[in-house]
Picture 1: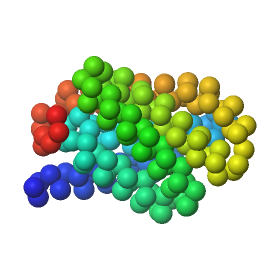
Picture 2: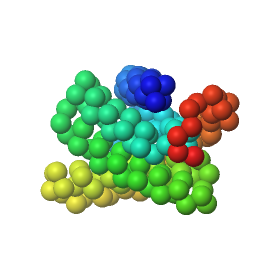
Picture 3: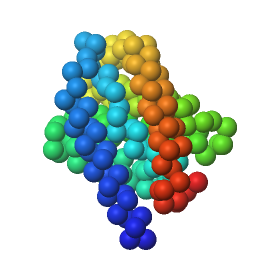
Picture 4: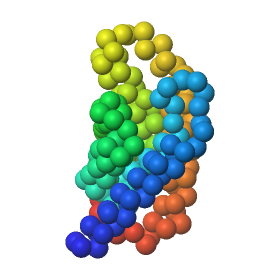
Length: 167
């Protein structure tokens, strides 16, 4: 149990580092909300190799901690909405057994953007924000696919060395 907890701490640190690194990368298309989602690599890897509870725990902790360190209350709110919807979708798709890692991650990227837009529309009381959905869906598909490819490669290369929890 101690070893699994230590691994979770390392994964949390890695996801926070990836979030910070992502904030330093000048990646912008002029539309708010488009991000690479590098921390999602850790969540997908944990979902497949350690278990859903551990992945959810690290995901929520990362969102809250990076929000306090580098963001604000609204960034935490938006990220939690996107992160929780994304996680729920990825968990259900993986659990079904019908989908591979790439598809699961792609769905996660799409659902993350949808969750953020829903909360943003409520917070700003403006439903015109839904006009961003087509662009965000494309961005979520591309970044989710790339993260899925990377996650799949990591699982193949080092997955056998990770503690098993919920496969």
